[in-house]
Length: 334
Image (tube, rainbow, N blue to C red):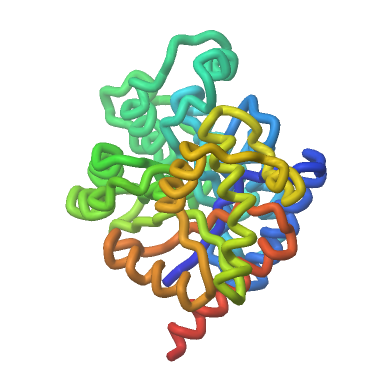
């Protein structure tokens, strides 16, 4: 079971953006020491608590601070950008760090319609153009645009020998099928919407070898909180519960402190929402987390898990990733 990390670079209440960015660097170094496969950054805009707004820059920073772990994006909001520009950005990063760079892209608008419009400099929504842009991006990355394509003579520079592997992030069987037909990697966002367990089998059934990869490879991204006891894991997860509640309401995206949580009064509706959000998470001891991931691995036919842990306690967050990796390694050895 391969494990990786998805980082949204959240600000802990009372902390600063600068501190949150530095904590991401520290966590990436920690993940590399533990033997995690890859470290990706999300892309979010116009929030007060998520500072991963330029994942390609964060990936470059992490690559320069590490030596073995793969770095990438989960993912670049392709509908808002030019496929050529994205291809050239990642050719440059791949040239600087050969064999270590992943390019994950998503269809999300990046925020509200106003935010999306500002991001695209007033251009009309490109959400419907995502399939075309995805195919063009693959063509630019691998110099494989069809002969009849209007940009066939345009070559993405620098012309590196090993382009960044292309991945698509999705939440549905439709996105899974598209990734399979293009022959690229697929990442399913269980941490956003766990209601489509058939997406991964659909992806693998639809997969056709391509210039990007010869065999299908699927990653499932999920919220995980792990501690040495069930009680401690539940205590730590409370800040993530409240964070998800606020994010879902379009409010504060900073991870709340225990002091702030203790002052809040939850409605019955809030409590129900928290219970529903728990379906997006695995929370518990190392043994429990391992067993749950094993179950999900079979359910999804997953090749890898990408973990995201947005809790307030920094040291406990570091420890959570450590305990999970140690348990997985222990079970593999057994």
